[in-house]
Image 1: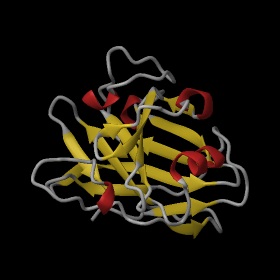
Image 2 (image 1 turned 135 degrees about the vertical axis):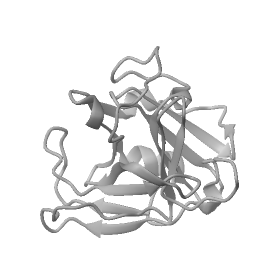
Image 3 (image 1 turned 30 degrees about the vertical axis):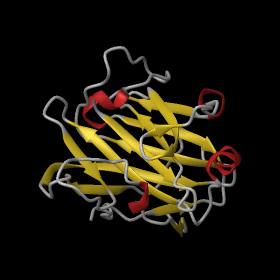
Image 4 (image 1 turned 30 degrees about the horizontal axis):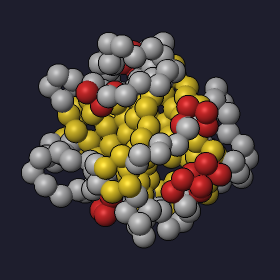
Length: 210
């Protein structure tokens, strides 16, 4: 999993950064429009940016930039970060207008009894001016991730998306196993590879889809 590394602190509203495209769904069917995302690390934070690239169905109770469980029942971009040594992992959900949710798991689909104070630490952003290309993001402090999951170069990570609800499309950067979509496979999350941002990216989007 590639993460862009910035030596300068990033700021919402000035994120001129590279994007990756997911070109196929879980079943290896080519998408009419790719899902877009970026993962970036600056000196203090990890940034997760999601672009659905088509109108998104949001949870009917979700307000922009608010914390709400079960966002995954509708269209959502997801970031998973795992600790390969312990099997623990974090899940972050992001709706197209910036509503979000997060959970810490001690093992596969087993939420921790003592959940982190995500709402105190994570900052969401969203711009749904153009519903066909709404952009949402979240900024997660590195010291928070280090404390909660021992975040570092040894961590595993994956980015997924659910789009087109109710005729749902399941997208995953990592090639996960199984005939039925299941994003909770931390043992298959690829390790992180840091890529420095040296210059403004060229037109076009690299493809990370398996």
